[in-house]
Amino acid sequence: MDTTLLPDDGALLAALEREGPMNLARALAVMERHDLAGLVLGDPINVFHALGHWPQIGRTRAGQPPGTFALIARERLEIPGLVTSRFLHHYSWADGRSRSDVAVWLYTHMGDEGDETALEVPFSPVLPERHSAALSGTERHRAAVSTTLSGAMTARSDAGGAIVAAMKGLGLWQGRVGFDHTVIAEVAERHDHPGAMVQADNILREIRLVKSPLEHALMARAARSNVDALNAVGHAIRAGATHVELQALYRMECAARGNTALFLNVDRVSSDLSRLQVEDGQTLMLDGVSQFLGYHGDFARTVFVGEPTREARRAAEAAAFGWQAVREQLRPGLRYSEIAAIGEAAIRAAGYEAAIGFGPHSVGLAHTDEPGEVHGGFWRKPDIVLEPGMILSVDCPTLDTGIGGSAHCEDLVRITETGCEPIHPLHDPVIIV
Image (cartoon, rainbow, N blue to C red; front, side, top):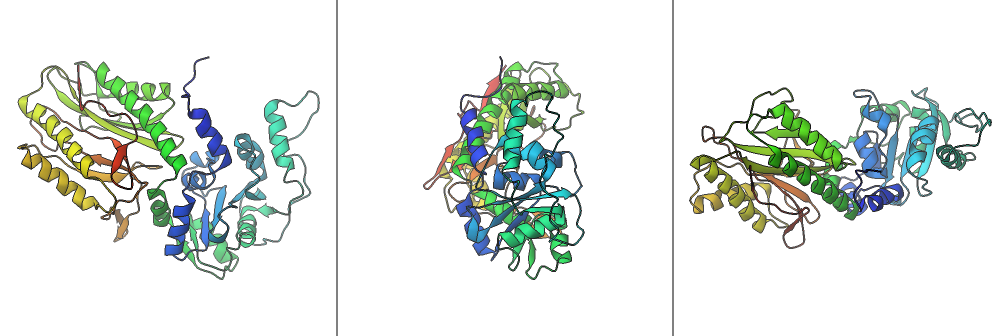
């Protein structure tokens, strides 16, 4: 049977069955820095980061409050908490894992009636049992995992009561607690939470900035498939191809390698509706982002379709040269602002006249995965200092127009104790077709 799984995917999936990908040492340091007793999380991306579990129902209910929550207590990092409905625990959580290290609080009804002491009705099967045929393997597994909670005094009638019970059970009721969705703060206020509730979106990005070994492996897996998919598109380009055709091909090439395509920028155009055609003699950039289990690959190269103009060729050389010069200088302690200065100085010293943008950004569970500074309610990127364990991209696109096209060079690297190393194989900066 054909499969999109790569040889090491089984080990990655097995690791996610045992643990969340979050760097717990980093989480502890960040919570201490912000004086947080813990975190209560409802955004699916944060639940996954904490527990290795995607609440898939949450993916399809954009704008609605979450129904599954993860809790992390600073003093009990080894015992994360899960709050979800009895149905979703049986029908979703149980399918991927059977973990004894997670403290579970279940509820029957969405909402919050204000009584966190109301216990659930006595345990009974979540779904009707007909007994007219033997249970399937899936049914046996779900029943076994659900039965492990049959005697636990962790069930509540509604979601709000379960969240409060979980916070109390993990020792989070008195202190400063970070949250990522307003419904969590509303529940705490309604139940007279005596501690402070702190909006933690930026704090969670600060945690994600430095990744765990499992995250590094997931990032390398995502990046490798993304590189291969984009290279396949690049080598398939011919004059007359439209942008939408190339984007469709990228989606198929990503899927064939187990990734999910997010976007492909063709010649600076990201619109899904662009029917512009590739021309003979054109130089164009391809910048593709796809993800595997939520972790992003980000890769860009230049394509020569026929003979490029001299200016376009020089721009492609400048982008690649500047990125190599930057890559050789990346190390802990370097600031984002210094990265741009290194690239600009390198291409000018080499005699290139092209305008190249050197834009660093962290990559992980988001394409731009770093904490931000809030200015008048808007977010902007701060001058971040590189740390070991970060996964970094430096976008190096040409900014000039009227040179015969566009150029770009981009790879993903991991910041080490002394420098950096690529997390995927490096390829020639230009694809010639």
